[in-house]
Length: 291
Image (cartoon, rainbow, N blue to C red; front, side, top):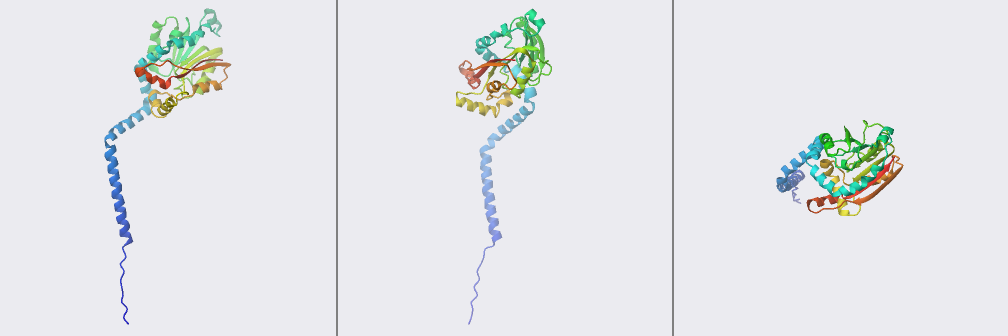
């Protein structure tokens, strides 16, 4: 009996896997080439944007933002001031009835006022005659403008320009100020609670804190969405401002111990054209907190 031997051929497993890997690598390379072809024209712009963000992050708060606000942003602030001028005048009107806690100043009919972040001094026109004004300003580029404003506002005395933060006014003594003012400031401080604590500290007993601040949108959800989007991306880096901050709620919680807080929400008047963009910080709160 003869037994026929048959041979069966088997493919080599290693060689098959190698071929699959080469095919996968080729497909991956092809996909990468397609992606590079699509995004290639945008790479230089992306690189420039990335470097710009790094520069803003490192130097924005100490160099770029202060110079930008002092030299470029002023005309925009001026338009805002003109739009709100009558409302602000009404808000500050009761200041003239306040009496100083300092006996010497009281006899002279003088108030000691401290404004936080006055910028170019748009609020100075609202202060009572003979007021002694000190400002705490994080932006040193405004110092020259501050003393130059003395000629424009001879009814008040420009006393001190202090470069510093609202959360740390260490150069201002306790219980030494009759009136503290902030307008459009709490959106940019590092800590609203810290700023309020310092304001309460420097106010004399019975002293008042006048505030006028833009706050988080509560009526138009699409505006709130833009506030969130801008605040969490570029707005804080470029302008040092958080559009979606709830300053009104933080003040109302009154953790620092004001004896009374009288505040109300409102919306600033809207203008057409380019200034319509102000809708994104048109929600405001104004109020007076008493120590």
